[in-house]
Image 1 (tube, rainbow, N blue to C red):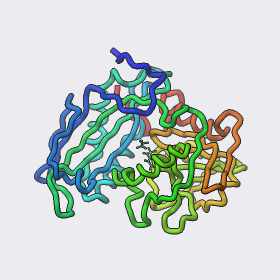
Image 2 (image 1 turned 180 degrees about the vertical axis):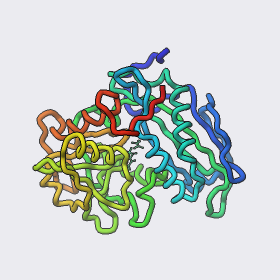
Image 3 (image 1 turned 180 degrees about the horizontal axis):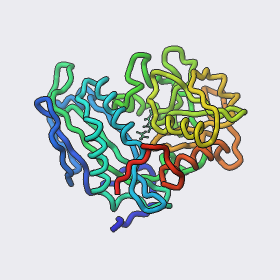
Length: 339
Ligand code: PLP
Ligand code: COI
């Protein structure tokens, strides 16, 4: 039976669910893994993750479709991206097929927490891995834990569908040859001060520029960014230091193949944003959140929408969420059935 949760009023917060997946890596191999009710982690005070932040994570969602199936969206791409994160952080990869299997098992076990169709809420799935044994000289751990928990969520940004305001901070996110392209916990640790400061100043998110030249648009703390030109082309930054968002890659495909729009992945120099007519943030948590204003130290770029979101942004949003919720036929391999 579904849990007694006010699905329609959920924000993006943590609610403990009943089960999580846990697998341990020791002596050069992963164990079989198990579903557990224990939401706590016990490890050495000197664990590599605690001292040197050796951890990475993923984020995807499970949906109840219009015909009451339980599905998740492109878990194969999360598995692959996590493998890339692990390689960059000298962690053992968790095999792709086992990752997908573990996601399915965890969601199935927490079926009662998957928000019903039509509530606007979804089940957020958080796979993650960390170095768990004691390490004091700077080197990788040799024991790891891979876990997946789930939590029902609503909109990432307060106010739901309202267009947000973002600002260019006085901080960088990713070094040119750093870890910006992988989902390392450390990328988020270094963004905490910037996001607290942004919120204090009344902004919803930080828009980072490329740290080498501070002239090009990169992405925000937790999402990629897309723009729409006056002639309805979708433009998104091409950069080696941003996270390859699965939502963004899917939206580019949707724009081309479902909406017949041109798409461009290229460098975007800051002044060009003034010429765009729509802007939105995209990611698993953000889905596709319209941006109403970008502030860069006194310089303001405003996007005017009739209904809080751009016309093309709304079409992209409806098509992507339609595919995720089973209202629109999905491209081959995008939807993983769970139940
Ligand atoms: N960029 C950053 C920095 C993120 O944290 C996320 C969230 O996962 C994204 C982009 C969006 O990626 P995805 O669409 O794969 O969730
Ligand atoms: C996601 O969208 O899954 C993320 O990991 C972003 C995070 C800021 C919640």
